[in-house]
Length: 305
Image (tube, rainbow, N blue to C red; front, top):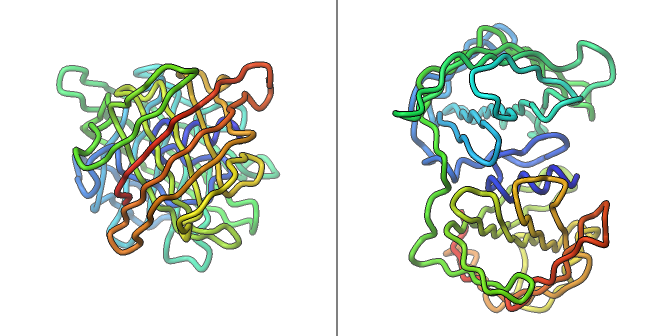
C-alpha cells in the first residue's frame, strides 16, 4: 500500500497498479493526444490506443499509457533500465494494469495479481529510446488478472512505436495555487494536479490534490471524498478517506503518510470543480515511525479534472 500511494502522488495517478481500483489518469502527458502507435491483441481481438497514447520517463520509471475510444485503458510501468527485456511478475516493481470500462465492474486487472502460476505476468521489451527526440518503442506480451472474480485477459502481439515521452511534469496552471511548509521551510511546487477518480464498488469517488517538483521526485498531496463539503476533517491515512502524503525523494520506502492532522475545506464548487482548503499533518514512514516530517501552513486553490 505504501508503494501504491507513493506512485499515485508522484506520477499524479499514472502508476495505478497492484491493488489500485481507479481509472488511469493521463494528466501528465497531454490527455487526448496520440503521439505514436500503441496496440495489442486482447484475447485475440485487436485493440488500438486511438484516443490517447503517450509515455513518461521520470523518477526511475518508464510508463506507457494508452486509451481507446471505447474506454479501454492499458498502462505498463517499468523500473527504468533503458533498452532492456523486462519481466512482469509479483516479485518486481514492473507491472501492467488494464481497465475495461464497459464491464459491470471496472476494477482493474493487473500483471501482479493471481493465485496460480500462469494467472498473470509476462514480458516487455524496450527496443529503442531516442533521447534526442524523446520517443520510445517496444513490444510486449503478458496476462493480467483480477483476483476478486478470477477474470483474466491475455495481451499478445503488443507493440508501442515512437511514443513521445515526457521527462518532467506539466507546470502548474496560473489559476491554481499550492503552498506549504515542510519541516518549517516554505516549498512552492512546479506542478500541481487535481484529479477526481470515480467510485468503484464500495470505494467512493475521491479528489486528490497533488503537488510535485518538476521531476516528480518530491511531492505533497491530500486526498478526500469527492462529495466533501466545507468543514474540518481529520487527516489519517488509516481511515482511508482523508489522507495526507509526503514524498521527500524518489525512494518509495521514504514515503510518509499522515497519522494525524487537519484538513479544512473553505469552498468546493462541484459544478466548476474548484476546491479551496488548508491543511497540516504529521507524516510518518509507515514502516519506520521514527522517520517523520511536520507538514504545516498548507493551502490549495485548485481546479480538478
